[in-house]
Length: 510
Image (cartoon, rainbow, N blue to C red; front, side, top):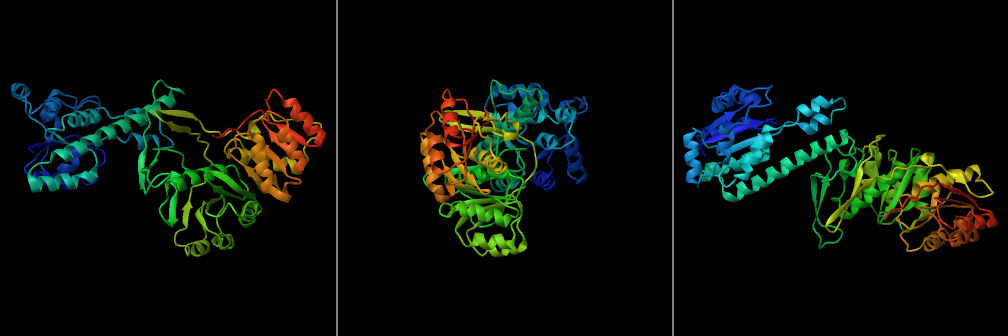
């Protein structure tokens, strides 16, 4: 290895790395701020203009885009023709490229960033050098990540060269890095020009952690985080205690977080297999937990609980009494942490509960493809809800109906939710017909079904669900409407004295 080209935005570890290269007899070529940092450390360095014979121009936009650079990167050393051309044009081969890119992602993350600032932080020369070196990795070592400096140095010290396997691994990392870099730029510009469903979609995610396994032990899995994704996300959670999160934990935690965000008053959500098994609202977080627990004290066992207010000691003592997988909250008091940390495996997560208005796309993979859609953030306040029956809901029924509508959006279709006294009393999820879900919810509610209200994620194709609800003691129903047989359901509701609200909006969740 005779010559290295170094040009980095992230200067972490670059000075000691450059010093060790020079000690190994490597000549360093560099640009701009990197050259200055190396020079100020007393390390000999050649400026890029000395190699190109041309000054940096256009405020640094053009400095490395030159045959003397790219010829040195792309020449195949086993080709006599390539070597002859290098000699003819007096181009020296470059054996090592150390480059990382303008901080585009960090720039657009700034709240006051301008479009002009974003554009200026799109790197052109850097990706070109990285891609050229990675393409020619048979002969050129290319490093984009400071964590790889030590491995390169050790191989040079031990063997005098970087081995084929490492060069290949580093080249693959470069193409992942440049692809991710371009994906963030593409997403930003696509959003700026208001393209909603472009002809091609490139997405990138950063690994957060390897997982022990996927849905089942025989499936491999990992957890990735979206760059600049929503702040209030499981991906941005902080684990304070307990075992490592599993694949299923993360899915369930995401479902819990999505539902708890629906509430501003103290609320608690218990999730089992991505469906809510108990939701409670109260004047305090302890009251809300009591209601969520009472909603289904059987299913909450082994579940995930999300709270939208700080966990206090009194609530923690109650949660400690049962087996829970995860507790999610914006914060825990010191006393609450002391109580809950006594359970070795209980996972405790804090999530930044923000009021962000950011709506993200939901990506769902299928075998050989991808579905993409907007998140379902449609609330009752946006709907043109109408009372379809002769009887209007009472004030108490309206409050319960609103809660039922918030919850049913997060239950797998076909979905039926029963609410009474600020808590769910019955949940029917994922059945093949709607009356089946209703019967499950009614059975679960038991005596509490009397005086409860019902929420349905989609319309009633027949009046059988209304009839089952009325005969059980349900007093009010909220549903989208839109069936060709709506009149049958309205007539049945009137016959049974049920108040029925139609929202005009369905909430399928498959």
